[in-house]
Length: 492
Image (cartoon, rainbow, N blue to C red; front, side):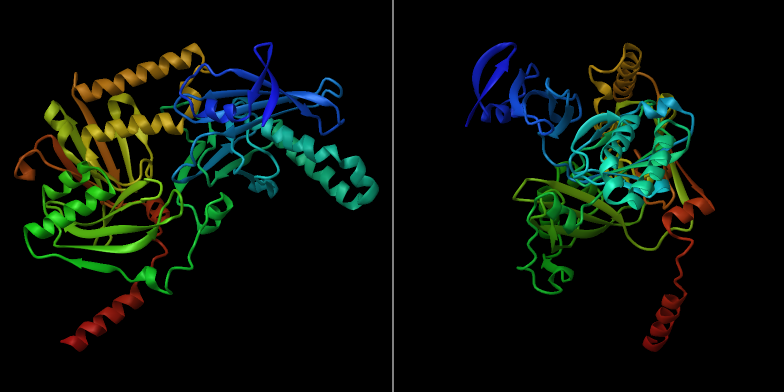
């Protein structure tokens, strides 16, 4: 189907399919399309302008803006042309009263995102506001204006409801003007939404970012077909064991299982210490497209560390790959702090196991990543630095782009240069991994760990707040301990 458009003021005929082609192209100089569209307010024809662009280090997006010259109706919309992210995202922004800078934070809300303000028991569902590029203040003001738009009609039909909405609008506008503190929550199962951190790359105490696995219901809402009819009841809980002979055959099978699930980096790092004698596989679901796939798992012991469980999965349908390292055994009584003094290039090759409960600090850059950032991974010191740079660019979105002012842009360029210098080891620097569950590890550069003077392990008592965050304060194992003791006595 062809539509009459105007490109840079010159009338021409453009196929609607060209919009899709322009979005998928890598050319940053995308044209501006103007399409004659029907105004839903007055019934006359207005103009919709489309701009196909790529926000640096964020997403490919389609910006559309409609304007009607007859009734002055205007609206804009953001649609994401890129892929749905492997995980959903959850942003929590604590907004104090009287802080106007907090209201100027840029917000990208996709068409699948939900916005909540718990203090007002207020929620903006995905269908209420389409995808938009705005600020915290802009989203609240728009919500208030849309609620107020039909108040005159409500007063005639349902005066009681209209009166309740008037009272609510007073509270909402109080928040929108900064006279009251509140919590701004943005949740997007597609992972395509974003709230700006103006202090990046430094952490922001007011902003919390979490990534999560989507539920089957969220997969279905995003348009993925979740088919569970072919699964037998209870089959997902019955792992299949692939027995391999002891020795090299078992090692080869374990290595092949991991490589199929992720890069050879993980295999090389783990098999330097030991090789699994058996690999277990069990059915799973792809975290990106919800298609059935297989997850491979094996248990191995790492010298000077502990028993760990390595899980790797790959999806033949969409190509998504994922690997996780889970701790084995009991929960340690104390937390552990690992300090690595990086002095030469060889130190960059040290193997690193970072659990999903570990925080990372680099004092020389005044950089701190909270626990949970980057998730659990197996890498090297150099690989960890590269992951940090990639994560900062992805999480902080278009703060790297052309919309950034000169002061912030120079700050980011300076930070990037410092990050690159760490991998060149122009000067000695320190890497600190703090894990409250002591499930992280850095390999020594010597045969005996006590001979490595550049590597330090410090144990410490966890605080009540750390135990509370980990759920240990409410954990009661007394019943299980009694049952375990009785079982051992019977066996004896």
